[in-house]
Length: 325
Image 1: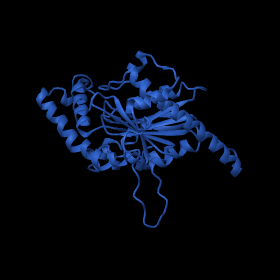
Image 2: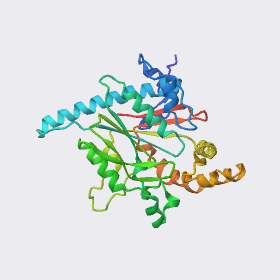
Image 3: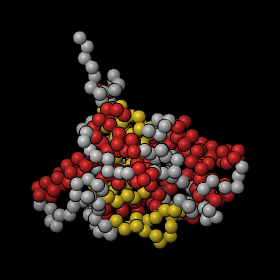
């Protein structure tokens, strides 16, 4: 007699890993009776340029994930309330649940973050879900140029880490009207003086390249906070390097026909290039900047995520790895 493996045990060495690995089909079964709350038009609006998000993807991947996150939100809030009672904390405030979404350029982080925001806000009680990208916390181009960092934009050193940590600390402290800076992908720069106000949300989604990046530990053991200290749950979007390169180049070429044609665009100079020259620029930008950042800073943080969503060539999530509790 033979015994079959549970559907989630997709690899023979899985018991040695800190993750439980699910096939797409096994993960999709976890949605149970959850009803799809989004329409095809809503999914189309949530989808980023060059992404191929479908209703089927929302049902198979994101509905089960939103159920899991809803459970985590409830349990985290209950634990927080119990701890406040135990420690007799004065003037206790409800702190928001913070979800981090990380991954490479062109992997689809923005789409994932927006879909989760839409789904989580429709769970019972209609929680208030805010979405913040770390792009707004990049140093202004003028500062990056002065420091010789324009070629390393998106690398950890290109962010105003103190401002980002202060923002997350204020959010976690339950402060009202916490402001985040605004970034323009058209001008490729932080918008001077522009802010978005986050006011007592139930959930905050923080999306960015290096949000799982740890700080270098000090030899004297002094506490140095880093962004993921403030996360209650984290998701990493993963894909093979060759796919990421192809998606980045494809997106660049599409932008060359659309956003780059705007005279205000930082990349307007690329719109006039012929196809061969534009392809060469896209490949060079990927190979010299984005691939280096992926290998040095982004991918090494993958194993720090609570959940890993792995994409295949079709942009669909093919495997899900959930960290064991």
